[in-house]
Image 1 (cartoon, rainbow over the protein chains, first blue to last red):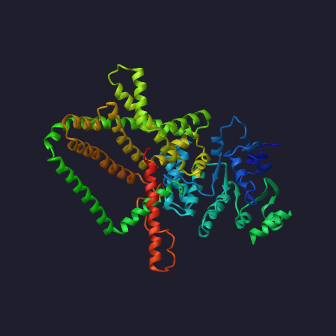
Image 2: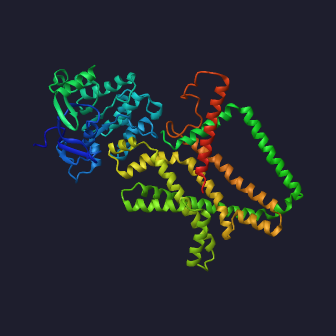
Image 3: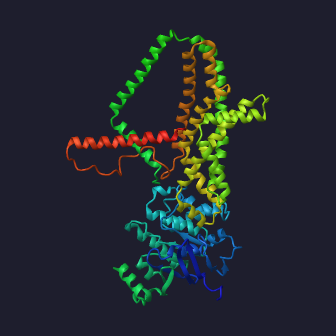
Length: 247
Length: 317
């Protein structure tokens, strides 16, 4: 098991919350610049798996490597890992008391210790990139869901992560705002960002995803190239899920 | 944002809104109450004979000295109480079980006993330790106030911290923040804004509680008023002066804080000062005026009840 391959790699992750065995030996590898989409029914362990990848949750057993570094080693600071592996949440989780620009630059200034002016330049550039150049000074409460999620993406990108995790980034959005977020994610993927995406947006999974991993009951039921898995799922459970979600 | 705690606030808001809508009626009722109080006062004054303004003006320096001590004791006790309250609240959410237990014990004991009893207990303790120290009464009184408000403020801090969405903390950890950075950069800036109103309430309660120090002989405002009564046999003048001086402290304070609260308000954080009438459930289909009036009355009674219960809960027992 070579640790050097892949931008992010996990090996036989197990995690329990009390009696609930949420992850039962999940492994995955995402190469640099690749987009891995994780599909599966809710309660199947998708969110927990993502959180194990940036150590927001510590797996009970198993290893995670980021860019060849074994991050589950107890000597590695979890804060450092989370700098390398950014995360975008379902409910945006912007800092209510900070304007859009400050949400983006906070990590730069306080974690990376970048001088304020330089951070502001980076923040402005990133917000322009997600199409919010005119909303720099707005508070989150005055932004739509789609705008908030784009600020959240910019906030994650500010730390220049090696991998970005997306935890159902469009599930909390009104339908009219979904596409603007997916567009940003698509362009990010095109620019070569390594991404792990939990989503139910099959169009995105098929069009942008390179690989798909189908997770149910804490286990990988099926995995493979995106198109193959969506169009020709092999297992009955996967087929049932696909037909349900594709209507 | 929606927690059980807010139910009382909503009731209060509903009451205020109702008062706003029925402005003329409200004005009438208030005018009536004020007039009633005023006439009662005049009545007492006539029994009392004339108001001895000369005495009041002679004693004003003494009253001001008492007021000064009241303010100093309250302000100093409150300030140290902030530190105590913050540390206790932090201990209550810490990883150490011992710290959590100690903090909870502290809060339970000092919120669960009358402050009068606490004052007397501190006096006993202090008299045992430093029986001849010149400022022993002051020390006992100051300790009682500080330790008491610390327990209350701990709960205010804890509530304010709990009001921050878990997701924001997760996002903070997600960008590589340590526990301390989370507290300093995400929790505290929001918590401090949220707790301005309950902290003001606590300050005013503490200021009023400081009057209890008069029973152990601390020469604060209430003590001065009491002495004035005993020495000059003019309780009406003495207590009127005391009352007005207390009001002179509390009323402007509430105003200043209201301004501060508005000044530091952030969209989406805490309750709006005034909310337009939107987002309310559509009224039921009109089935008759009497029934609608009945429903409206129920709603108002409900709102008033919650409002009053909240107020009662926030005053100390």
